[in-house]
Length: 127
Image 1 (tube, rainbow, N blue to C red):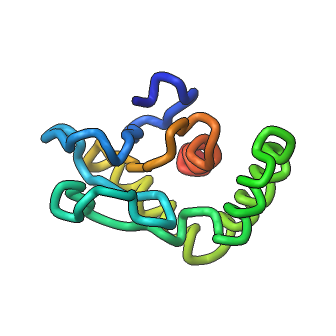
Image 2: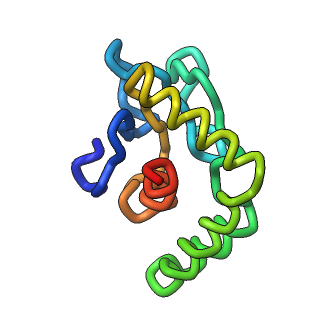
């Protein structure tokens, strides 16, 4: 799934929520603010729902109004949100987990992860 996203930090991978979980997924983290439509919690096998790593509702709505022209501003604003204390703590914990017990699989329902918040999140995880 991560073929269209470059680079993916070591120890991480990205999958869509609509893909069946696999034994080699490791620790599965949902990185969307909203639960994926039509996916049951038992079928998703999510270990953690990291809402604090997702763009705020306001930022997400603003971005979706015009994603093509707002992409750069969105990335800057999302990085500011990821700089908050709670998000930083989760990033540090997930980095540690990816180093000691990989992989950490980021789960998202977005159709095109490469054109969403996922590349910014991966960049933050790789720092």
